[in-house]
Length: 364
Image (tube, rainbow, N blue to C red):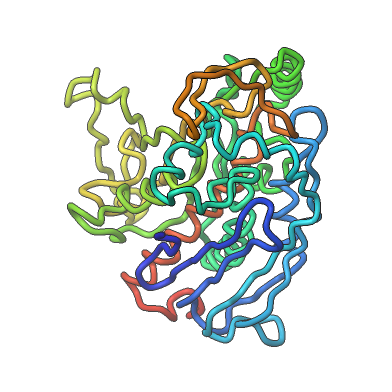
């Protein structure tokens, strides 16, 4: 299994949804970076299940750092982050050892791992594993902020309800950093939450789109062709469970424009080359152009629903029906936004280290 991402700064995730522990190892990070455990806890809280719009599974998600940090700073050696699983109901999954849940990785896991996989709660395929990604990402986010690079993600659409787009990036990202439900327009918060609660009552689920802005990222980072900045960001973002689409800038809308309307004009602004629009989303030729990087990710509806569905019993290959039991999210989009922030931060740290050297994140 390929569980490590990155070239210079790498992150490895491990564990299963109902195993004893999950976690991450962050390696290649420069020595001397501040590790704020209160900030890590705050980031973890943004991913936690909350109220009727989330699963009833409530984990403490306390992160234990067992290596790579001394006196509150990174040492430059691998940072191991451990998170205990404490609220598992494994009995809810006994029937699913052989009956593949539609929309899940149960069938593909069976084909790849021949029945040896841990199927409880989705095992290693579960969104639960993203907790380790958020813990590691918190260290990366903190390091980027110290260099003037800020990341924020909001719920652009959910259940047919839309938030406004980014405006004042600095203010919007700052507000999103502590928002318990990440929208930019407070008036859409309650309708979105009510929509999620409504589909929950129907035994169903809902998805949506996230929009991410990265402000302050320098120009000249990335590679043309196979390791373009879009490629590596997409690679990581598509690794997040439920993400089924990624676009940059105006994305697919560019396909319906003319060249004269899609091009971003260059201007000299106070001695800096900038573009007067940002339809390319801050990346040209696979390399950052110094404008804000804008990313949108499509998050599918949670596949765990409580309606009867068709499947196959893999013991005798018979067609059958199943009704999923257990505790599941009617939507994951509000919890996924901090995962997207964390994933993007880890990619950016890796790309910056490749471009400017490992110690760039700690140099003044």
